[in-house]
Length: 134
Image 1 (cartoon, rainbow, N blue to C red):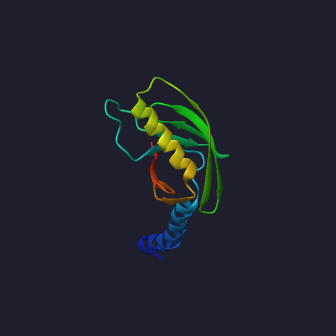
Image 2 (tube, one colour):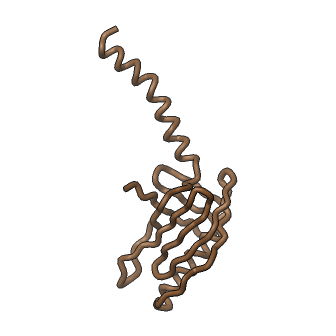
Image 3 (cartoon, one colour):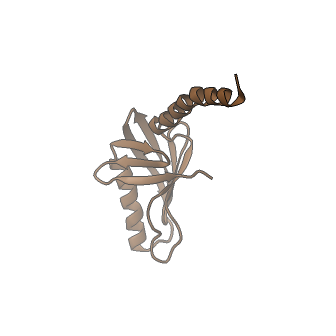
């Protein structure tokens, strides 16, 4: 067998395997992952809310102004987020309200979906987070 035929055979065998791994990643909840909300910073700030989900569903939220914790429970495409304690910091009323609205939107999410590096939490408001790949 020539080198080019051997390479073609390897590619023919590996492509379906690699495609399956990518499809599985799209179906797996992002445990052990750090993500950033797809949004712009609040006026006068450079911060973008982030969400870190541990291997057991424990969550750390680092929002525009507040920081806190929570817990995710997942079954298939169903998700439940229970907010924990949020640390109050010196915020403007608008920023504090935006943080509260974000936590409430996560708590009201009933489903999740992952497409590549985008994880969506779906409820009355859909929140899109981008997985940090660095």
